[in-house]
Image 1 (cartoon, rainbow, N blue to C red):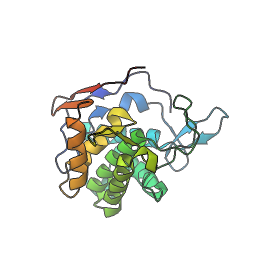
Image 2: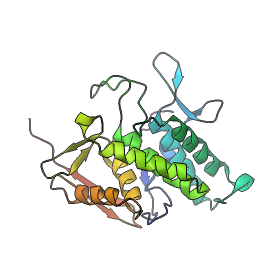
Image 3: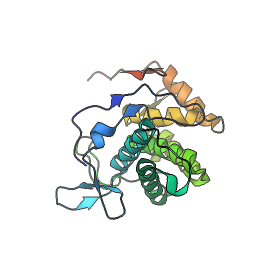
Length: 232
């Protein structure tokens, strides 16, 4: 997939309440140049020239395709009537579900020098995006495995860093997530489901944290994320 040069465009979509609708950001501009392999799953090209599947790219493409299907009012629920956009969502969701490991995540196959970490690291951004994909896969198909995958991803996301997860907790027990707003969107969407009270508690703690505040104007697509950084 080509590196996006524009931030995701906000849409006048709805904040999910029980069943997710349009994703909170329009990722279509960022995913317009996506490469697909023979199984129609998104791939990236490494510096070596080889291609690989990256959970972030896969999830962004899935959500962009879902957005396109809703924008075109082409969202039939079953079988052969599904639009190409919905089928693309389900293809990416199926790959994510099959590749989820026993910890509930997807290990990134390339290093991230800016952190720095070697290949095999977990990203809260990837986890949050995957949760949003899985919830839409579940809403489309009713397959419980997609919902279970969402729960597993959020559990790993909220696990402390020193226990192999993606969250650093302040002294009040509020999580700081690596992955910024994409992680928060996934957490927010699953917290709307009353079947996961622990996720709702985590979301409430995060939004009430003195270090980070997220304000969402549902239906207007406006999000403000404030984060205080430790002084060097």
